[in-house]
Image (cartoon, rainbow, N blue to C red; front, side):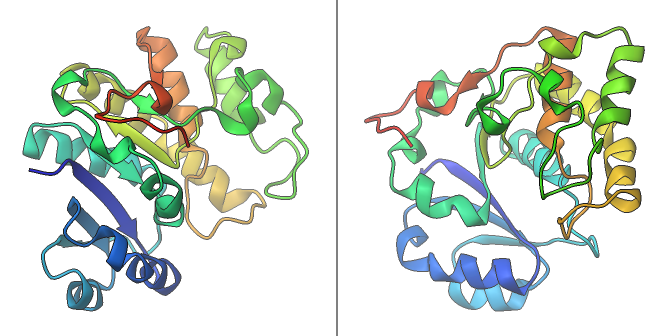
Amino acid sequence: MSNLILLIAKGTYYVDTLLQYKPLLENRLNVVIYTDEVDRVLESYENADVRKYKSDVFRYFDKYKLTYQLVFEKKEPVMYIDVGRLQDILSTDLLNFDKDKINSIYTNGNWDNKSSAEYLRDFKTPYFELGYWDNILNYFENKGYNISSIEPILERTFVFPFNPNLTNIINEIESLRNIFENNSKTKKNVYSGIGNGEGLALGYALHKLSIKKYNLIELPVIKQKTL
């Protein structure tokens, strides 16, 4: 059976994007799709497992939560892919990962290739207001953690293993959901969903639990090409 892939298409723009990839995805993958336009997606992906995405607004932390739930439902590793990044992943051999050799989390690097969340202090960008992350960084420090040791992890594509440690990681991530989602609601940013920056929460969880993650280029595959 093909490896298990999770996609989330919330909103017409992302559903339209997903439908564009039907020729590349069809009959190639074991796909689970969460969407708010179930009937429309099923018209194109008749053989996919299409599920209702119930939240009125896209919640970025759901990437991790839904992937985790699927891992334990199916009892096998799951690759999550942002719909907007499908073309990048489909052009590689990463979908051919060897699920029997996966026991760790694999991600596609860090924000802006930075190894530390420390650079987020007073970070200037058009995507969110100055000081957007300061309260979250202060929270980490007040918990006794050095932010220079916390990685801001990219969230576009990742693989979760079928591993008991994953439950502890998700519990730590979920403990941060409210503070991240509140930032979205009270501070200026360009994102239509809430809880952006979920990769920083993952970085915190991995650091707190002393769990190592790996890069997707290290993913065990049948034949490998880099992104």
